[in-house]
Image 1 (cartoon, one colour):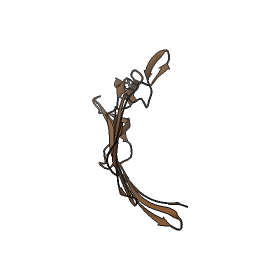
Image 2 (cartoon, one colour; image 1 turned 90 degrees about the horizontal axis):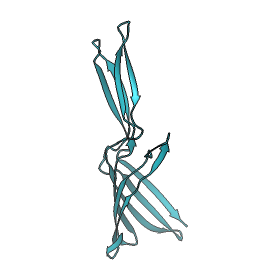
Image 3 (spheres, one colour; image 1 turned 135 degrees about the vertical axis):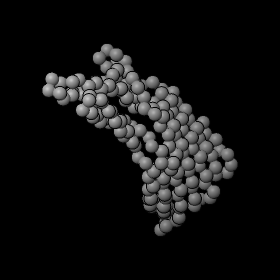
Image 4 (tube, helix red, strand yellow; image 1 turned 45 degrees about the vertical axis):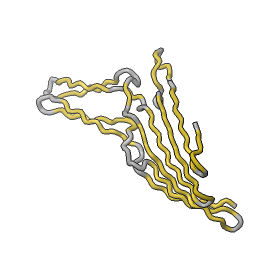
Length: 167
């Protein structure tokens, strides 16, 4: 859905419900980048021919992941063995993903063409969006298992600066 609020200002909304699955060993499972629900919104303000400002927000359901289980087995020599097993393929989901982006562009005429300079800020709120997990394990001398989960995160707040000359 797209609407103009006033001269030079408009917004855009979209919502998608989708199911992406693959057949793995005769069983249907969500694709790795499956996003069941995705919502995007943006607002643009162009007060004149020389300035353009845009804010965009997106949120979607977490991507599928395969659960993991760990089990300690005592060995005859007194050591311990940690067994790592995968659960049902892509049966769990990561947390919800969302971010806010912003961009401001300034235009100017230059040598018969149009010159623009912009600053773009990806993930303005510096949201910690997770793309996967790594695990570390340790076993105490008495056989107590400790599992540490490390989230693999996507890009943090990332400002970029650019120049463009159309001639």
